[in-house]
Image 1 (cartoon, one colour):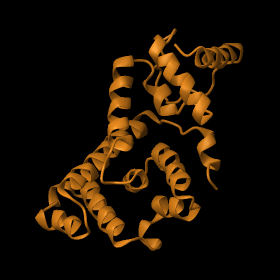
Image 2 (cartoon, rainbow, N blue to C red):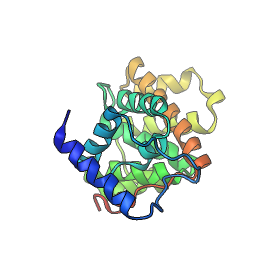
Image 3 (cartoon, rainbow, N blue to C red):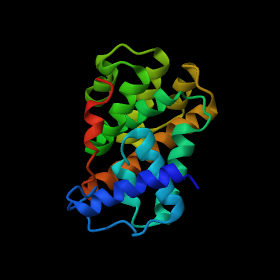
Length: 208
């Protein structure tokens, strides 16, 4: 148990009950479990404490804890676990995929992550608008070319595309990770767009 986290979550939920909730994370009528399971409440409280918010994608999943746990497990593995890709490179993949798919939620949320991790607001904007408009290392150019093709025309991926990544310095395990991150965001983009998931307002001003 984390008493301080529980106290914080209690204050958040109390405030939500005192004021009408008009900031549903999606257009779907899928209210969160009430009460949330202990582990979920603790996790949300830690998010609120560390991030200053509970990301709306987590709130959107809170109607079904099994689905929430599956989502967070996959996210944590792909985005935070050890990899030959840096955390910034993984966020860059997320934004480029989301830009191609015009996913409002993920462009905003992961654009903020790129700005935060890089310390470069221009990089975050370029990933959203046109990644070719900014000078990038050859390694990242190869990575984003592969991601772009995998998103737009996956059936056209061929050995030459994988070899281009090897030539840029990526190991085969890295190629797997590039594809896994791109695949994950192609899935989440579609879910976010289908449900009209809205990004937290706090993302818009981060690291600018």
